[in-house]
Length: 81
Image (tube, rainbow, N blue to C red; front, side, top):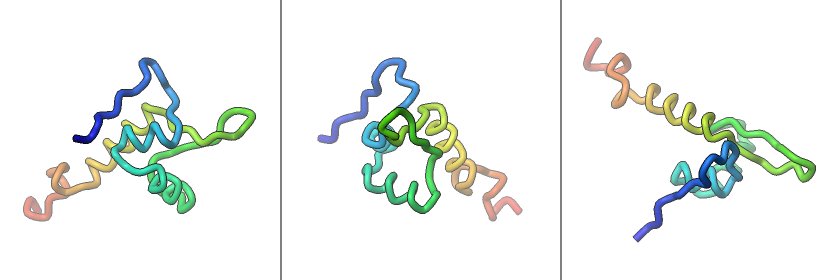
């Protein structure tokens, strides 16, 4: 049985591992997307330059994905034209 992601309470920034768990993806997928300049926005933070994701940016990116899918967005449904 897969474990459900439990975010740290109040954590505004997520590591690659935590962001991947939050999205239900592998960390490798996020690394590949970042390299290709795809996927949710991320940036380097701190003296060690760790890649982080803003939780609200992840939620916004998820919403954008939903709106770009004709199954979730009636305005894009080809049967409605």
